Length: 223
Image 1 (spheres, one colour):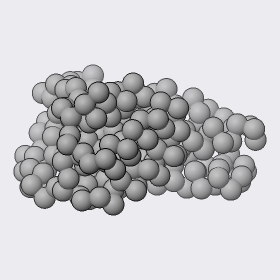
Image 2 (tube, helix red, strand yellow):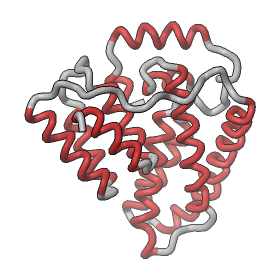
Image 3 (tube, one colour):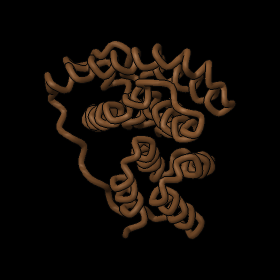
Image 4 (cartoon, one colour):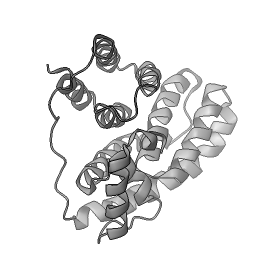
């Protein structure tokens, strides 16, 4: 996953231990446990919560793939596909993420016929993954939902300014602008204490869970 480089070395050690331990209920075809855990900082509890959020978001977005989008709806379709590309990659669903990447590129270039050709395949894969996730979630796991936002982080003026700017993008549902800002923020020290929180914020943004994403940002800023 793109956010794996944000995970500090000590958490990668915990990730390896958690992954080696495995655990019943976490064998989900189409999802790479190691990749998903990397986004969750090695926490099985957090990973289980991310899967729940991913399932809820995909269930809502499945309707986007019932039929090819009309020409005037193509920009909104591309935005939805972009979000699913990122969120599926973050939970370790690399195959689905790659299909979404291809669909996004075609949509951005206005290749309507190619988009229409790919939609049934993408919908089939998405539906299959949702079916497997539904079985996993219905069976339940030993992992409780992840907790709420952690405390404030000691940021310099530049850091506070960028998080405040990110908050504005999220509140206005400016997903692509938020994405671009997060990539700039990723150039900071990868061992900084805010990197884990930034990964969580980014994931929530791509699920369009504005309320939780803003809550996380407010937590970072001490608001």
